[in-house]
Length: 548
Picture 1 (cartoon, rainbow, N blue to C red):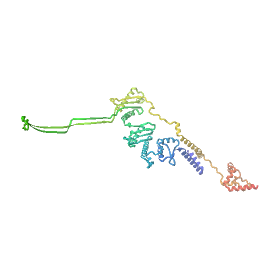
Picture 2: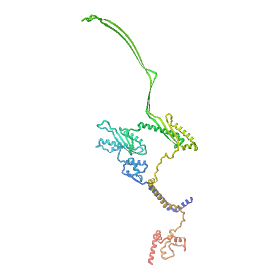
Picture 3: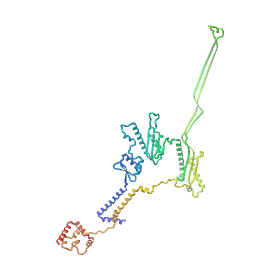
Picture 4: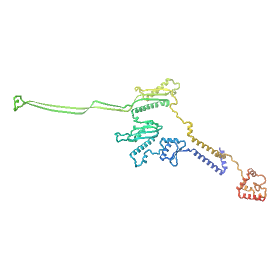
């Protein structure tokens, strides 16, 4: 390695400053070409998605595409949206689910375009309903999983010849994905009911884009049947969770399965009880009545005689019998209050009337625990132990009629996981065709640049240094050129002979013979060295030829 480095350093020193500068320029050019090619070729080609958009639509489209992981670019005019080539259809479908672009105002901004002149009360009411529908639809679309929504509202109306007022109602159509549609429909019903004055949740109907009815009429979650079903599911899930917590440390999460069926009574019970205590009494009131009565009676009687029958006669009365009486009465009434206790009990809970539990255990796991030489009696005993464990974890009660069954069976592999479809090779290649083409073009460019640029430069740097050959200097070449005098006299000094040189071949003469160029090249070289001198020589030659 040091010898190679030394060879490279010696070669660089032998190149000189000009050649080193040329090599540096070539290397910079190569790196620039590679960088520009990588940026240009790896940059995705963009296609126009929409043009002539409003600024609000551009912002909403950018948010949706960014959340979906689709790259985009906005044109210089601010009204054009560009997406990578091959994703145009996907981006348009995604934006269509969100109701974009929507240049038509659908919310309360409708009132911005409504003039104050010539607007009737009916038109104002219709505009208000449209604005309310648009605002509610936007709010519904902001819920996670809701792709698009449309709302229709019928406001309350009371006619002149009707006694009853028409109740408001609403209908909602949604497009969703990846959510529980029924739960979302319940939430949407309450949202719409709270946004419209006088609207109740049972007057809101929710459908999906396929025409399936998601919610209508009374809220099913408030019925007794739904409440009972919900309580049963909660109890069963809790019991199943208890079984898992009890058996997982022993058998493992994948070596048993438990199923629970619980019968739950959710009837509302009210008990009233009144208790009287005869040993405890309290005077409530005392009433006393006292009466004194004195009675004197005196009676006069007329005698019976003839004078009674005579006219104008007056009979004299005589005193009759007399009587007198005296009566005293005293009465006292005492009212007592008996101590009593009244108990009223209202129960809105539930009670488990019966419970059925089935547990299956992987037989292979039991054999692993007990050993390969385990007998059926040992397996049965271990199953009985597991059954006791399950009974303790679930609150098993024989008096209530509960049933529990634990069995050891052989499990089949691959039933729990559902195979996930993977895209085929052709589909994957089709999705990344543009990327593959760009990558291939980039590899070709890098190969050509490396082959025609870097390889010769590396060969030049690693080549062994050659001894430099000292060529003739400028003065020697000038002296070797024929002069007019020498040409005219026909002296023995030839072109290429140095003045004052010894006769006979010299190393410089041999070198000149080997690298002697053509006459035209020598003339051109002479012109480059000294134009005036060459012109004089040519004039002398021409004059000699004319004189001859």
